[in-house]
Length: 304
Image (cartoon, rainbow, N blue to C red; front, side, top):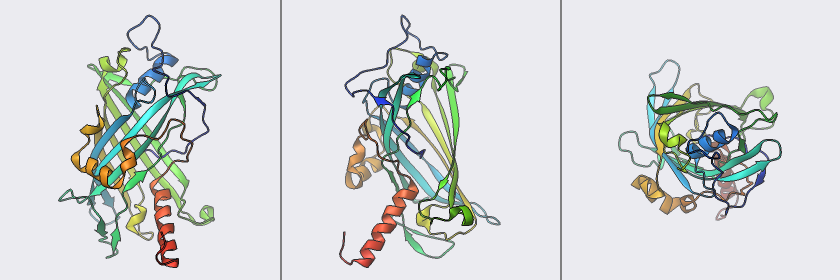
């Protein structure tokens, strides 16, 4: 869901290494320590065990908002992310981790929930091919419990009646790879915001003997039109609203998603390797590859 640019890597531990050390002599993770910050976030995002595949799944709806019109329910959503974490070391910031992942989000018919192959654009009158999200990779920067000055990073978490809650926002504003070299002068920058809210059982999260927590997550995105919709600069925005959870196994994914992975995205049964150094994929870079491949096919009939 989150498409941040991959930064340079810290030293990556071998996948054979196991979990980060728990707090000495304690069975409860202390969120006010650098070690606790790393452990809590690893338990939420992946696992304390290196190279342990973890799967998130979510579903929801996508809407259009155009000035002067009622909002339109365009699509239902079904998504998954498969990930793993590895330990990293930094001479100044100490022991941390890095997450690598790949994700799929399918656009479904809002009435039948069938996976869409094409879509009738109600504004342009054109029928366009639906390009589902298949971003590989969606990797994170190394994360540590201390900042560059050595200060402990606070855990952004609250608690009510034994339930922990964590939320954060990801404002996105970057050069759109589908546009030309003059965006500064004519526009074309991708502008969106993604909002994540996690919650779960506090005892489970702070138990140092459990390698994972299994939170519920909600996701909201405010964004421009999807590129494959071919909206040609029309006024309006989209908003997405979905909920999901971390699963105990790949087999818990919805049947429709497992079938789609089996037939169209077989590599998504597992996360990327821990030493993956590829640039992150976004809906825009993925669409650019498809557009470019269409152009090559048009210019060279019969080409692949």
